Length: 487
Image (cartoon, rainbow, N blue to C red; front, side, top):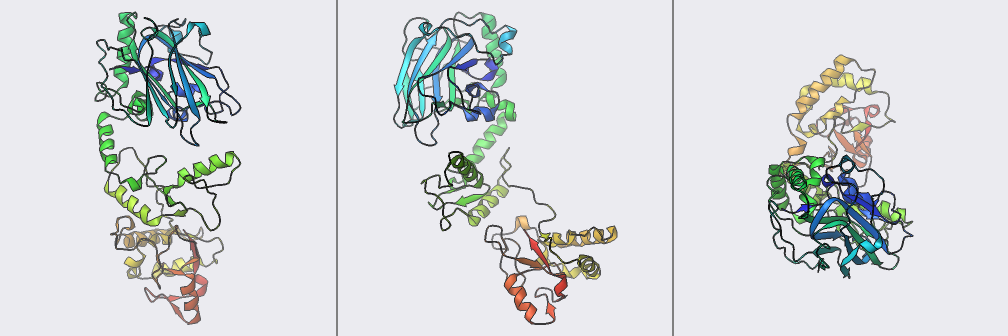
């Protein structure tokens, strides 16, 4: 069991010789906050290579592998990397309080002459680099790592052993970004240094490091070797965020394997709560599209298709994908995904709200509904019987309680959230049975005193023939009692 020495529980320190962009500080690479760690490190836009990032450890380590993940958004930026190590230990040690509570002060970094070049790589289209130590041998109680299969997206490079201390007695690791593409920005998405305490470390240091590692890792993962591309995805760094038990991780992995690929956002690889169909034919989540638009706006560009770069026009806009959303919601109702709240906002009692321009005749409508027979609340209005809860402030509490009881009675006939696929998919016009949905172009919708809904054309047609009656329940309708509602 080798350990990721860049995790915050092992108290590493990190320093960059150039200015970092706001929100992308170099400390993000070893941060305990998962959100900051996901941002990674990026310099200001005017910074040019070389850029040095130095990681210092509170005890000497023997390096097994160094993983570097580079951002892929916006094209390949970093094309050249160099790796240096130094055996000169820092003044802070693993057992001192100064190491346990690292501050923002710059760690003591040895001079340039104290570092030894142990690796170099040039990238073409790859975004992940693995520097491995071929001569590494795990010592008990640390178990050896299993061999990993090569991947075309990962560049594997062996570290050069330049002396007894270059890889087996390391106190500082320096990463140099030597080349970027064009006007690219030097950046690192994620950094991992895997290894074990050096042979020169005392038994007390080894025992304390092993204790911290065993407390951090889930029990079922503590004896497993890390896997490419980035091993910390299910490592201890996430425990402070979610505190997930091993059984929950296994259950989550099993469920996600059964998720259809079309339900996943191709950019974030997460289930899409609100799928949007792009002009290019791709489907992404609405939140992902908004993030892409904000990113484009930050550079002064208009919103565009993230996959083609073609700007949106009035005739070429992203559209909601209601059929896919219905399938995703049905899948989420049938499968319980632990730790995922993907169904959007919780439904409230006021699913339909009256317009602010409604006529002041709601009190009379409520009084008429109070004396109406309960049979008027049939299955046709069960999904939207909650509209009867729209009680004006002048309505008595007794009337409001009766209206609430009547609405609850109507809702027992049918549950909108558990309808069969062949049933109604939402509120519909009582006359033409047209389904009202927030995914289509919004048109005026009107509510009759009995609770049924009508679209604008059907209401206009009924107003031509007097007296007006509801198509569903045949109750008489007065024009002044009709309300316009919004979803």
